[in-house]
Image (tube, rainbow, N blue to C red; front, side, top):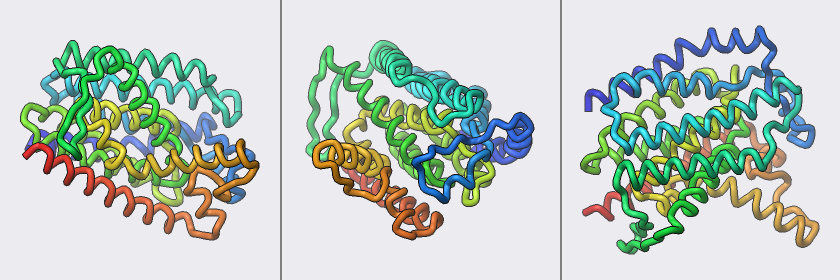
Length: 322
């Protein structure tokens, strides 16, 4: 318990103390956020805000984790997945700021990179950690043997979670706060499960870094996490779900990310099929912005929803292991 607390606190303090110098460094090089032309009008004032804050998040995570961990396959697999996804995000962010555009790496390149990361996570889970290629249905206390389809399923988890966190990263502090809440649930899940203390330590580092980052990312944000942060955090959450056999439960634990993703899917389907929009703008947090809700009200209410979803998911998990 002491190691976990020290790791989380160290990540938080590192994030708080490193961020000012990093923000100054990014401002000096004019690596600012590029805002989509079709985005909400109020967001254009945020153009030029320092981005790539995910570098600070994962620096703050890596130092205490690498010093304090005992390097078991469960934690190393999740950490490697998170860093690999963050690297994809970094290349995406760097492409945007260098070429001064809101679109980064090509979709096909991201797809291939995500496939490679998913294969790596599959190998770490099955060959390294010795997990079985099964799907655990905790609500009904059953499991399904996926066999050769297991790596495909892991890809869907990684791709879906990284996309969900990335879509949620549209308001100041929204993604960082929601990710911290979901990761806090994973601290509880891994801490009460025998043999997963290293995962608890990693989850604590991630929570600490997210909370420390919120010091500067809360409204009005001094820095954005960028794709470096959102894809990295999505990869970490996906990895934790795979290593704890909570992939299906992640739909509830990360319910806020599911809501954001579904809002985009519904909007695209409705427009392509009926040429009508269900929401004023997707993801759904932009819909509420255009309805006149203040940014802070949307953020706080989404945090509340994320907390409720994570609490329900944690309760279901706790009941399933009794």
